[in-house]
Length: 417
Image (cartoon, rainbow, N blue to C red; front, side, top):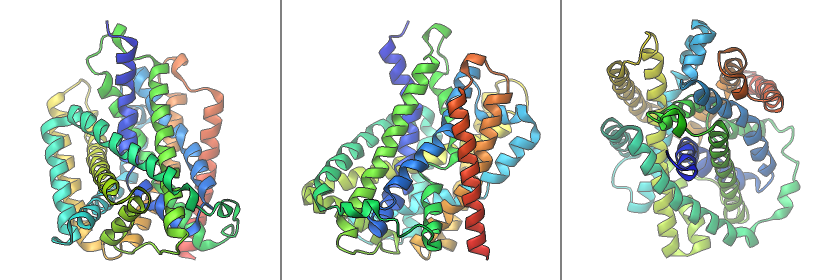
């Protein structure tokens, strides 16, 4: 019989993986850019985005704990159309997401060590290392590595945020001049796409939840409340860190009218300067290494997430728990998506900011589809009534679907009009 503390520690694992994947492009890049470009004007927008997207992720925890199956099984239960729709939605996104996260990681490496290798080549090396770690170590390595790396960044980011508070122009918090500005709306969509994670990350959250409880006897399993609590705390942590990066961008870059650099290495150098300006050069070096570490964790988590999604979708076609079938599909999925990501690095990475906005905006456009599928799973698929989410969070998800759909339509009108 395991203790309550052990169950909580196990239950928080999927949430920490979620946070490790979140504190990447959405935080280091997009939240910092929001602060640098608008001060604290989009501070409330970041909060609202996190609130609206929370239900879709939490539903993945609910379904996985109740059924010991991932959301992909729920999609299949809805009908073949649901699983096909999900695969069609994420298949074009996965390689460019990996390209974006690995390019950001390579940018930090270049900013720390100097421009010895071109960004696309260095990013491809990052993806190769992530692939090796996942194929050799699997979920257990991913979970352990993520817990350690994330802890470093949390401490340094909170410290830097406290130090930068006196430099923040707090008047920008009530600035509403951006309302109705088409350019700002386009940026908000790009900001929301990965904030705190793409909505399709709800599927790997459900897979990680199943993995965390694999092999546990019924008496030793974490309760639904423990799973929900562990994920809620991790989600709140990722939201707080997003606000921290916005504050740092506002305090250091917005106050001094520093424009975000258009290239990966240049922007990474600006991130490092945020820590240096607040913590001093020595502490900044530690914080920068922590940022590099957590970005590496993000690459690993994202690579695993998409590969598991594709592999589970393939392996779940036939009844039974065929480990070898999943393993083969998992390795094939990793190699395919990483290969396409490397191609995207060389073909698309000319302007870092434009590339990031393209990737994150594309993720936002599919968010209402995934949120709707998750809603249908927890309300229509077979699971214990006690595990189904209550009316308040279901209503919040419906509101989120409606709002994100309207924003997606507005984005398409502005882009295509």
